[in-house]
Image (cartoon, rainbow, N blue to C red):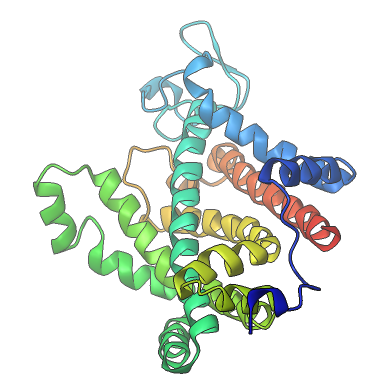
Length: 317
């Protein structure tokens, strides 16, 4: 058999990446829901990138006379606390905007790492089959049998900054924020990668029967080439949609960990920790609590709406 004898009726379209991106943007403009979601996501990305350019107060500066002030309160320096202050007199607006940097950085990094591990395991299980599939699927099912938040708590409790390992890492000069962030990434990877692997495995089981995979095998391409160049790119549509949804889930998970004091260490402006710090002040703390909650909700809502629009685009592509 020669490569030319392999049917090519289902060969995938090989359009340049820029052309695909421009077409996707054009299709996104047709969805008002998708555009609204994109605006919400781009707003927080712009805030994170431009925080240093905005006239904001120091997010870590405390002021004893200004504890739990409501929104639009006057500051001693003649300025305005646009969103009020928290239980330590810190400006909530500054902490929200600077906190968006931490939220986006660690959540995107954790999602990327989890996806890299999950896609690698999933494509190997789906394409190689046999004992590869059995071993990877068994390990994935073991981790999936644990509730994700319980798995996060176990990993962070035993390997976080307060553990022996965390204290040792801190003793050699690594900052507690970096230690906490890395442990969060590890925890989310263990809880999320098996789910990604299962999705990728299902897609690969369908794609590997296509004629263009047979053509690549006849050409003598290596399994590594087929998995990374032929299979994964042609599974990108469902994976991009799932990545948006999963990123929102990771943002919520990091916020919950911060609320439980298992996230980034104080005084970092972690949105989840901002809610936890004022939960014991009743009505006085409601103003300081509502803004980070709205920030989390708006960012996750934007990602979910964007994912819905991308799903429609992937079906039409």
